[in-house]
Each structure stands twice: as C-alpha cells, then as structure tokens.
Amino acid sequence: MNIAYSPCPNDTFVFHAWAHGLVPGAPKLNVTYADIDVTNGLAAEGTGLDILKISYAALPWVLDRYALLPCGGALGRGCGPLLLTKGGPLDAKSPAALSGRRVAVPSERSTAYLLFRLWAASHVPGGVGEIVVMPFNEIMPAVRDGKINAGLVIHEARFTYASYGLHMLVDLGSWWESDTGLPIPLGAIVARRDLDADAISGWIRSSLRHAWDNPQASREYVLGHAQELSPQVAKSHIDLYVNDFTMDLGDSGYAAITALLGRAAAEGLVPSVDPALLR
Image (cartoon, rainbow, N blue to C red; front, side, top):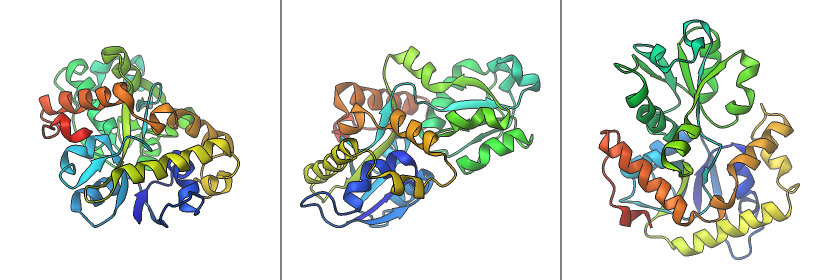
C-alpha cells in the first residue's frame, strides 16, 4: 500500500512497526515522507496514494475520496500551535498589536491556521495584515531575523522556540480548550474510500501497540527522520502527540473535529461538512 506521512517523531513512532513488516497480516508499505502541507495537497489532487496523514483542516476538500480513520492521528490537549513574536511592540502580549502586521503560517489548510483565524476574528481589531505561508521550519528564524512580525508554529517548535529568543503571544491550543472544553484536532489519517477502513485501522492500531510495548524498537527510525532534534525533544514530541486519541478518537475526538470544522465553515474558511461523512 502507498502511504504518505511526515518525518515527525509522532508519525514515525506510530507507523514504525507496520513500515518494517512487524504487523502480522498487514500489507507492505511504500512510504512517502513529506511535510503535512505537501500531503494536504497530495490528498486534494487525488494522486492515488492509499493512506495519508493530513491536517484536519484539509478534510473538507477530500472527504469525497478519502475516509477519516478513527486512529493513528494527532489530537489531544496541551499540544496546540503557538503564536510567537520577537519582542518589541508585540512583547506587551496584547493581541491588538497584531493589527495590520505580517504573520507567517505553515499552511492555509492547517488546523493551526484555522485556530489562528478563529482566535484573531475575536481578538485582533481590524484583523492582521499580510499572511505569509512558509515551511514551518523556516518560521522561527524569520521571526527572529525580523522578516515577519509574528509566526504560527507547530510540532517540536513548542519545545525549542525559546532558544531562538522568541516569546509566546498566545497558546492557541489553550485558547481552544478553554473556549470549547474539547481537545485539539491536529493531524488526521485518511484512507481511500474504496479500501477496507476497518482492516487498515486494525493494522495501524497493531503498529501503535507494538510501539508502546517496545519503545526502544523505533528509536533509530524516529531519530533518523528527525535529525535536527535531540533524543529528548523527540521523546517529548511523541509523549505529547501520541496518546489515547491516537488509538481511538472516541466521542470527544469526533466532537472536537465537528466543532472545529463547523466554526471554520461559519467563518467561511472551509466548505461545510456533513458530520455523517466523518464516521
């Protein structure tokens, strides 16, 4: 089967066993490693990939061809994106100071972007100025070097932004959780609708159980694809993003996804989604 997921520690941890033939009965995987903004595009283009890791924000554009799987993704609490600044006029931590400013985001079809737009709609008078899309690994250096006024960051950046001399203006995950009481939907696993979703979900869960039962088995694979991260940062990344929701979304997981996409559709950020297509 052809699969695409990111080289981030949470994805390589989850899929290590399956990718290495350690899941009994599972077909061989042909893996494409790509940033989630790339996989979002691959899913939207209908390139023939069987399984992909995409952002929940990209779901409305692909649900006609891909089904959301109830496992394998990234959804949780205390793991949301951060909005960072260098300091100066924005160091007062006043959201109003973002009015008319340049803000870098990793994708316009990402949960991080949706959370930022939903938050900004009620906290930034007049709205922000220019939105600049750039690879997430380039955002912190761009903020540090003054090329942009603020940056929206994800993944391991929450563990490393202080080393760039940056400041957190808002934790958008904390805002979402306090506003809704729901966890944060980040990355989804989708599979072609003509495939056996139950079987694929079973193989993913078996791969995850193997990773949890044998935490050292995936270490070389994880670190080999996260070469800029220290082992401790990679472990922190896994501990944060791989959790009970990775094994099963459950009612609160689906409620969070429905709430995010419903709010985003009301703001005109994504097409409306029939909740029945999410299960």
